[in-house]
Amino acid sequence: MSDAFGIDLSALQAFQQAIAVTSNNVANANTPGYDEESIVLTSAAPQATGSAVEIGAGVNVSGVSRAYSQAAANQLYTSQSSLGQLTSLQNYTSQIDNLFGTTAGGLSTALQNYYNGWSTLADDPTSTAARQALLGDAQNLASTFQTNSTQLNDMNADVNAGITADVQQINSIGASIASLNLQIESGTAAAGQAPNELLDQRDQLVSSLSQLVGVTTSTDSNGSLNVFVGNGQPLVLQGVTTTLTVIPNQFNASQLEVSTSNSDGNSISGSITSGDLGGLLAARTQAINPALNQLGQIATALAQSANSQQNCGLNLSGQLGANLFSVGAPQATASSENTDGTQVSVSIGNIGALTADSYVLAYNGGAYTLTDTATGANVPLTGAGTAANPLTANGLSMVVSATPASGDQFLIQPTAQAAGTLSVALTDPSGIAAAAALQTSAADTNTGSGAISGATVTAAANPNLLNTTTIKFLTPTTYSINGAGSFAYTPGGNISLNGWQTTITGTPAAGDVFTVQSNTGGTGDNTNALNNANQQTQGLLANGTTSVSGAVSELITGAGSQAEQINTAQTAQTAVNTQAQTNVASVSGVNLDDEAANLLQWQQAYQASAQALTIANSLFTSLLDSVNGTFT
Picture 1 (cartoon, one colour):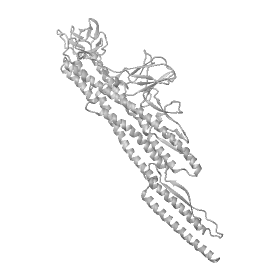
Picture 2 (tube, helix red, strand yellow):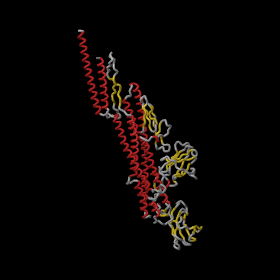
Picture 3 (cartoon, one colour):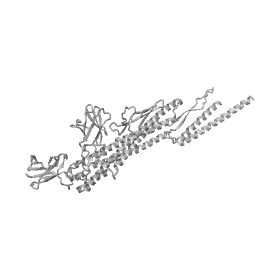
């Protein structure tokens, strides 16, 4: 009967522990990261009875397992990393879309008002009120560019703050995982089984980590979990952590990059493409900085075209117009890793060839290379980098102060700061050049059918631009200029001198005279005002195919399209993540209906074992009574 007692007692103890495990499941049904546990029962080794028949010895509790699928967990981590990246990126693309997509008081409206101001002035070129209103429109436009630039730079500052916070949180989680690794290793060695509670805590930390950065894991034989981020950078190796750090960008100290404590200060930002941290880095490189560059490209084109046209006209004082706008020059920043003090100065030589990209100019093996930072492609480069023979590419002219050391690099940003520096340089309304600089005329005494067109300014800086020029026909096919020379006449052919160009058509007679002279006194002339107004649709960018207004439309449309694309991807990834969570819950989650059934099962088993023990006790008592009666 002692065997029955042993069997029943082992069953009572096992089922009591089973009830405890099930009760613990119920208690933690809503605990984040908790994995359902199950008691593991094994049959005790049978005992010899002195005969050929072996009778079991009861039940043993060999452990408590947890419902866990590494495959489901990996899918959850991947989906969370992707969703974290898209959510962070969507935050900034939607802000940029709202910034540029604003209609009332937005960039598009301010630009339209500016060009309307030129049209209004063209209707009344001498009106002080119209001139003052135009300056106000120009100032409002410049202010809009500045405001947009400031808001984009504020987003970059916000990205820096986010990067710093994420790195701190990643380091904290990494340290906690390393600490749990040591506890799990110790607990496993002592108890022969990994402590489920600590495993749950560690898995929950990895889940939280995957929302911040893409992770991969591996488990050692001792139960320690190794965690890697990015493209395989170790964060946790058993009980040791590698600390992430933030470092300034080698070209722009105001933009932070991610590094590690063992990477010698080198950036690993390029390898971090998922999680909230990856989204922050992507927001800067794919949305914020491109928007700044594109905005600056438009500001540069606006300023250069307006100033050039101003320089081609006369103001109310009969003087050539001064610049209307002021805008910052392209930036060239030496890498902090350069070994010498060589500098690069950059100017824009061809606005039509100017792009909205930034470049890295490198010097290696006695040769320069120029790389587009947006595409990674090499850009064809000509010149030697000297003042007499500058390096030229994509509308830029670059002069290097001295021969660089091999390995030197320079970040070329043609337009990044332009929008933030755009301002109105002209303060006097009378300084607006509404009139054409030159006027042309045919002498009243001309007898031929020749006609002269208006003069177009080709070089406003020519000191002889406003000098009077007389074109006299010596014969119907030849002419002199200011009484000198004999030039062949081609009807409709260009005649150029002193920074201007005109054409004569028809058949002039010998002795016919045509004059090109200053338009001084032509205060009622609106030619230059109309030319400024027409710049709204004039092709200036993309090799003359895109106007300033067209570029603004492309900026607005591009921002909206990018925001919509990211939003769609985020919505799709949310569904993927929800399914991954469902998969994990189906494996590891606590089902209260199942647990209620289990409780009933264990309760009945416990009661049955108790009844069996009662019977065994009764039989044993009867046996004792029988034995006692025999010896009485």
